Length: 250
Image 1 (cartoon, rainbow, N blue to C red):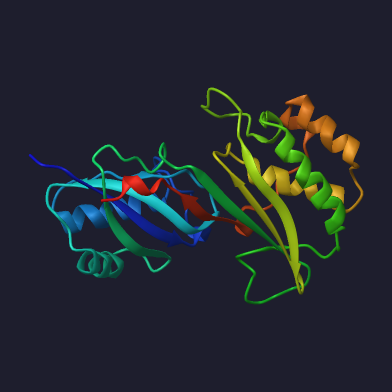
Image 2: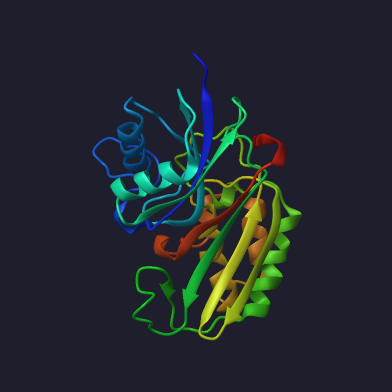
C-alpha cells in the first residue's frame, strides 16, 4: 500500500498541557493531535514532533509528521482538523514530504524566544515572566555571546534525561528590549531538556550582578547542572521557528 507522508505546521498555548509528548495520565499536545488526525483519517495514526516542549511551554511554530494511506487536500484537512482539536492548538499548513522525511531528525535549526515583562501586563500573565528588576542587557548579551564558543551544555540540562551526549551548536543568542519587555532569542541545531530556561535564569543573574562573566564561564566549563542558576518559569518560553532542507518537500 502506498504511503503518503505529511508535515503538519502548528502552534499551541502550552498552559493546559504537560508538554508536547504523550504521557500516562497526563494531558499532552501530541495526544490531542493524534486523536484528531485519527478521527479524520478513520484509522489510528501516530505523529512525531520536531521536538519536545516541557509542561507549560508554548509554540508559535511546531512541526509534526504522520503517514496517511491516501492523498490529502491541505485546505480541507486543516479546516476539519482545526474544528475538532482544542482551541488552544492551531494547525496552519499541511505539506507532502518524501517518505523518509522526519520532523525531528531532519531539522537543521530550531529557535526559541523567551519573554520577560518588566511591569505587570494583564494581557501577558500566562505568556511571560514578570520580573520587576531591570537587568543590565549589555552584561547579559556579553554573557550570551560566550555561549557560541562552547558545544557542551550539560550544565544547563535537566539531570534526568535520555540523551547520549550534551553537545549543541548554538548559532545565535541575544537579548533585546522593546518598551517594558525583554526578549531572549536563541537558535541551535538541538536543545537539551530544560536548556533554554536554565540559560535564561543564569543570564538574568548576570544582568542583576549576582554573577559576573568569569563565574558564568566557570558554570559552562563545570558541566554540572547544580552550578547553574534556577530555571526561568516555563510560561515565558516559546518554540518559534524550525528550519528544514527544501528538498524534503514534494
